[in-house]
Length: 266
Image (cartoon, rainbow, N blue to C red; front, side, top):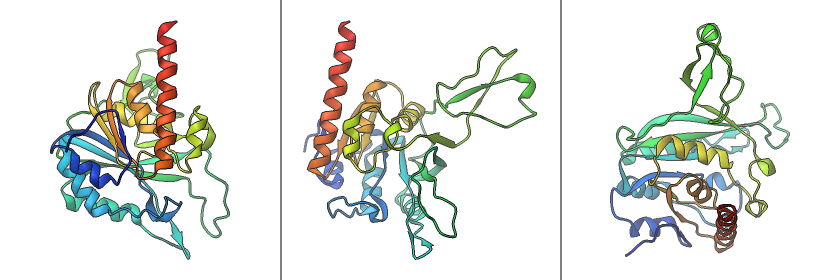
């Protein structure tokens, strides 16, 4: 089998993984359709087979960013997130970091005798020690460096200015993002029921890869990973079993490429 960079394969990701040579991917970033929270045309994914396939196809030092949460059924959380983490660990990956994707504006809901659910896990599974790490840094005032651990914003561009003798430190592993219509300017993306924020994809891609590296999304959905990769000079490839979602992602990517061409021509 051959495989083409910059293409979304409309098929089960197991089939796409079979096309790839071993030790090929620098990074995978995705959010799987966990716990049947939304209708993905009846598709149920075999997490054990996917974890094994990703381990075989990921380069030594490569990573998988797995964005996942848990459903609550009858007052009992499924703990699918941690079951997935154990499955990836059993496949040979390290659980390198357990990050939190916190939602600034979660969907209002009546949670009964529970606090409102406002986060998902972002597991970083690594094949050995990660080969790349370009952390998001935050500038802090030297005089406050050891007096306060309060951080007001998290983001690659949220750097403080005009400090005397500034110091830098890595941000914490809790990342705050807007969700819903404020998570992207691409209206076409919201034809998909569950996009993750563009900035989330950008932050993780910049952290764990360098320019020219290859990024894969095994549940491409609305094409967020592809767009984030193109914006930051990474190569990409995707899988998506739904023809409807492939059409959405391809339209979104084509629009981005047209806009980029028009901007370059000015």
